[in-house]
Amino acid sequence: MTGWQEFALALGAFMLSHLVPRIGGLRDRLIQAIGRRVYFALYGALSLALLAWVIVAAGRAPYVALWDQAAWTRWAPFLLTPFVFVLTTCGIGSPLPDSLGGSRKRTFDPGQPGFSAISRHPLLLALALWAGAHVLPNGDLAHVVLFGLFAAFPLLAIWAFDRRAMKTYSAQQLQSAPILSLRPLLNADWWRRNTRPVLIRTAIGLVLWAGALHLHGPVIGVWPFPN
Image (tube, rainbow, N blue to C red):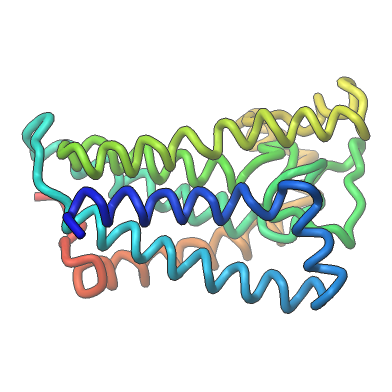
C-alpha cells in the first residue's frame, strides 16, 4: 500500500465512521441495543483511533509542497488553540438547542441560554477553528486536504443541525443562541448568571490546552512553539 493509498483509506474510514451511523437510524438502533453510555464509549474510542491513523497516514503520504512554511504561520495554531479548548469545555454538556456535545438531560431555555448565548455550536466551531488554524503552517498537499476537510466538515454539520433544530425551535428562540456572538461577554447580566460555570470550564480548558501543548512534540512529532 502506497502512502497516498493509506491516507485515502484512513481519511475515508474516518469520514464514514461519522456518516454511516446516521443512515437509516442505525445509531438509534445500536443505542437501544447496547445502551447510550456503551455506544458513545465505543464510538469515541473508534473515532480517536481513526483520527490517530489519519494523522499518521498524512505524515506518511508523499510530500507535495503547496507553499513554504513561514515563521509567522506557526502563531495561528499557537494563539487560536486555547480558544478551541475553551469552546470545547464550555460546550460539552451544555443545554444547547441541537448540536454536538449538548446535554439531552438539560432543557434549553431561550430566556436563559447560558453559554449558548455565545454559540449554539461551540464544539463544531472549535473543530473548524482548530483545523483552519493548522492549515497555514502545514502547506503540503496531504495536510491541506486533511485540515481543509476537517474545517469544512463541522461547517456542514452546523447546517445539518440547524435544519433539525428548526423543527423543534422557532427562529425567534434560536436568536437567543446564535452561531457565534461575543455580545454576552459585554453584558453584566449574562455574567451575573454565568460567571461561575464559565470561569470553571474556561480554567479546565486552559489546563487541558497546556497539557496538549507540551504533549504535542512527543506525540505528534512537531514542536508547537513558534520561533
